[in-house]
Image (cartoon, rainbow, N blue to C red; front, side):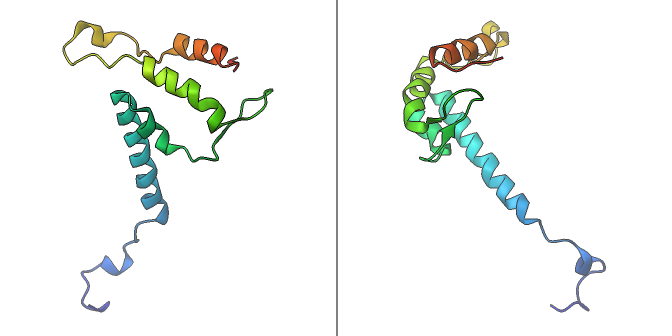
Length: 113
């Protein structure tokens, strides 16, 4: 099909931006990780991180994935499954709320200001 046989305006339509494809890949990876967290599957949840991933907190030494992995696995194992729809407890705060995050950071020598 050449430009003369295209519908009016089609020759001026923008092709999808390369960032759109990358965005979809990133969102899909995050969704897989979140789904794995809901199942309590630490291996699948941690697939989003590369082996050279480093946790950096201001004022502290960087920690490698290998250093953080035991803490992450422990926390995933201790998470409660989400309440089922219609369950009166479904309106409570997430088990990963602020207090839990603060406690995890204290136990793993991280600081939250």
